Image (tube, rainbow, N blue to C red; front, top):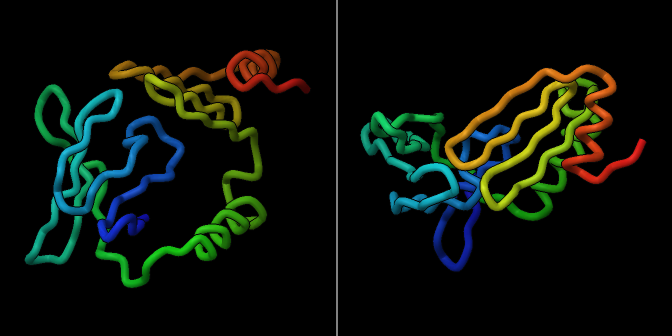
Length: 145
């Protein structure tokens, strides 16, 4: 989502994956450095599209493209989306375990029976047995069942 802060607009990616920036990316095209790589938003003036790009060891890679937002986000519209994500029968996020937290080096996510650890440029994705889900939830998220 594009969020205005101090008369500037930033792309704030709220996905759970570890392949996206953990910090706001200026819509102006300014590069930002996160724990793993550099990111920037490139604008295609002709098509009126924006591209979130990530610098990798082989060059810039497009993560996704999006259109200019028609409406500005408000705290009210964000809260509505959160409630829908948490309660809708169509949501994938209320059917399984879904835990995610940002760390100094990246992100840790437990989604269903999959543990995803992003630490700098390292990306680990591991399927877990039922007893391991509980162990990892306790280990990484300090949760007891």
